[in-house]
Image (tube, rainbow, N blue to C red; front, side):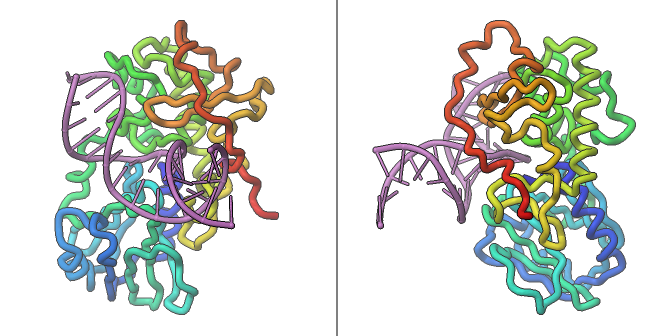
Length: 301
DNA sequence: AGAGTAGCCTGTAAGC
DNA sequence: TGCTTACAGGCTACTC
């Protein structure tokens, strides 16, 4: 699932390939009626065709393609959206919902199995991401900032990390990773964390995200619906992941078997020894099912 | 206002 | 074997 590291990896790859390129054609499938927001797909394609790409930015999980008419093509991959850099002669990809020809003969293909992905063409990219919290890898993001943004919030810390208005770019995978590094239990009420918890959590967030970027993202789901990079290849962060999807496997720190619970409707895996539970949570710890063991399959040899 | 959750979407896999 | 159901989760919209 594309989170900050997966979007950043694609941003960097595209930056090296499409800056200065002009979009010569645009196709948006009619079976993706929610893909283009605010305007019709005809209007979207008409406006995009002929524009030159002048920059690529990222904000949280949003990818921002800056155009020469000072408009921004904003892309959110949500669950299963991928951007592939192909030539027209390359074999067809599954689940292509849109494609964009470039003036050097290459093309960008938007594939999205679940069709949750969205795009905008706007004057100002900030209009679609006004409420986003700070960028976790920028200097503005500190333990004090994180703590201040969590004030008065009694929700579980795991749920808080997934709130994009608190901090931008963390999803379920990197949320579990950050909490494991910080040794904080996912059900701890956010407003009950101590200053030292916030320091460790801040460090854990940064570490988890940096490792994800260094590994070119995480591709942990069952094969085809995973994050893939612009060349169609998966990331390598599955070899780095310490918590996500490791239910029933030994903790890398203490060898205790990892556990899985549901927090805010989302699966959360943690070490019951390294990440001590808050008082009175025993009844909330019911595990609904055992690990499938597929989320961390070894990459093919 | 904060918290909790249904719904969007479809392939995979577990369970009967 | 074949069908049904649960699950994956980013985000919005909705209720309480």
